[in-house]
Image (cartoon, rainbow, N blue to C red; front, top):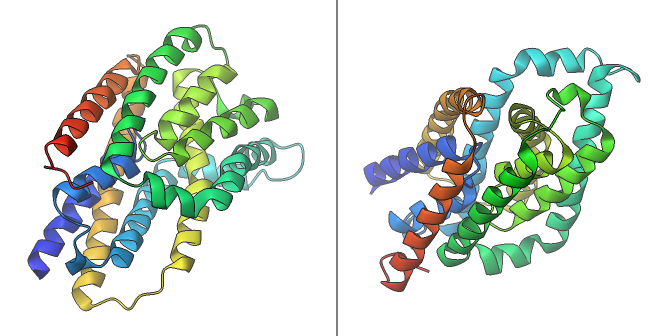
Amino acid sequence: MELMLMIKAVVIGIVEGVTEFLPISSTGHMIIVGSLINFQSPAYRKAYVDMFEVVIQLGAILAILVLYWNKISGSLKNLAPGKWGFKLWCNMLIAFIPAAVIGLKFNDMIKAKLFNPVTVACALIFGGFLMIYMENKYRRGNSTNKIENVTPMQSFKIGCFQCLSLWPGMSRSASTIMGAWVSGLTNVAAAEFSFILAIPTMIAASGYSLLKVKIKMTSPEIIALVIGFVVSFIVALVVVDKFIAFLKRKPMRVFAIYRIVIGILVLILAYKNIIHV
């Protein structure tokens, strides 16, 4: 059982690292894959699984800190009012607030009602079609190509769109990127704003979740947690770099199509009782 737990930790870590910053929903994929490999089984305790999924998200966040360290450290050195760092983090705070307020109010209800493969599949499908529509309507002609040039109003619009990601399967990355398109950001600027916004958003969400989880872990569970964290960090390092390179050349429609296909497949598997609802 201990070896199986380690293997499952690697699998979920890979899923998190691959999907966290792509517009395909890391939470949704962890729910689906966790159901397929029976990671939510009583042997591994629901409280532990919940904590595991939160902690490995911090591994992915660490990847963003590493990849964007020059920009992040530069912004922190320019936090005086009027400096570009001050403007950047004020905008991040503005974008952070809407989902934080709604998430705090409805967190328990969301976890009780929406954390299952069927609702995730519906979100994947809906979000896929929405991405295609938004990209066709808003992406071309956008002129804000640097996150330092984003305005407070643009940030607020992005933050409102981030609220969509409270529905597991919608994707925080997809929601914020769509909000950025509507606000006039280019593909690369939209992705970079989404990545930086993930730092306060996910640290706050993870911290809130960890405060609510009180369990005593066994040695194998601790080792599995470390493995999942490291794997998600390493995989996210590679994926984010490749994703930005992809966005410089091609549209995001391929991710939308993937979402729709996976969503339909999951609904079929759920109907056949292959995935546990």
